[in-house]
Image 1: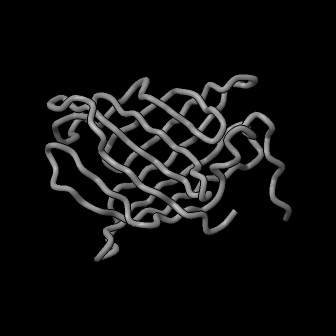
Image 2: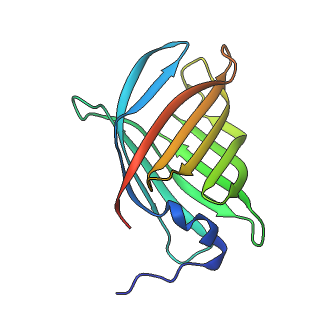
Length: 165
């Protein structure tokens, strides 16, 4: 079976497609957390619809135990650079982020965040993400967040190398 033809609406995000592995491990920090490292596998694909599918799967670098997980969709408003990022996370958070793609950089900010009724505190109140393809062809992601007790602060930074198209 041949792979589906990419919908032209998502062409501006084609640089994100593929399977990516962290290289080196990602770095996490936040005022309420001890600094940590993590490994992550990212899978970004399409099925011919005007949307990309994604999954992010983080692992402990020593034990390889699963850590953070999220999956969802990235949509582009046709004929614009406006992007929506919809994500469900294993922490019980569901978020919608919106922003813009400019060349090989995607910057998004949370538009709405919902959580399960028994999510642990402090609650996340805002998230920003920036994805960019660097000059070495590696994908970088930086995530910042604000919680009910902390102002907007960088939380994660990771660089991925592409392992499959």
